[in-house]
Amino acid sequence: QPALTQPASVSGSPGQSITISCSGTSSDIGGYNYVSWYQRQPGKAPKLILSHISNRPSGVSSRFSGSKSGNTASLTISGLQADDEADYYCSSYTSSASYVFGSGTTVTVL
Amino acid sequence: QVQLQESGPGLVKPSGTLSLSCAVSGDSISAYWWSWVRQPPGEGLEWIGEISHSGSSNYNPSLRSRVSVSIDNFKNLFFLTVNSVTAADTAIYYCAGGNFWTWNHWGLGTLVTVSS
Image (cartoon, rainbow over all chains, first blue to last red; front, top):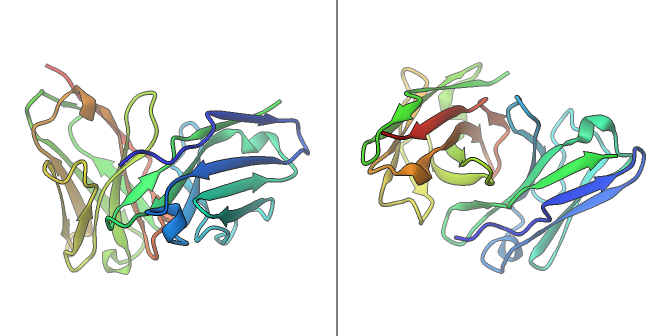
């Protein structure tokens, strides 16, 4: 199953907002609301930042928000901070009773 | 606080079998579904498969013929086996756990290299 499509990199200045897109098909993102986003920083375990499109786990900053339209999900980081520099991955449940990840996006704070 | 720790050989020979275990601490292994995820060098994450405490499992269709996930509820461990490995199986392997189609808990990952 091909990976969900994400931009390879996104950058922004401190305080700005950035949005990362995650494009799939009707067999994954379009067919379910089971889209999650994960943050991976060097030397750390991946961290769940959003589940079910837009639900933030306890302890995750409200600066992270999510949405979905059709076969595309999006993660928005507002008030960009230096600590937000990381790789971000989306994931979705699929019609094959499996999961697929996005290709990953590197966020750089300028 | 759930903690996960992967362990296993860091080097596996081509055509051999890759075997990893994940130790779960901080909560009962029956509380979550457990997955394996890998990341080849320079590539993105790939979901491998999952298992519940009752032994129900699901696999990535592209890997189904070569992988198996198992669980030992009494020892709070779950396992990954990948058969007939090639260089393409070289990756950092993560164990992860969660419910409701998401993973709240992750290990730090372990690098497995396939090479003679």
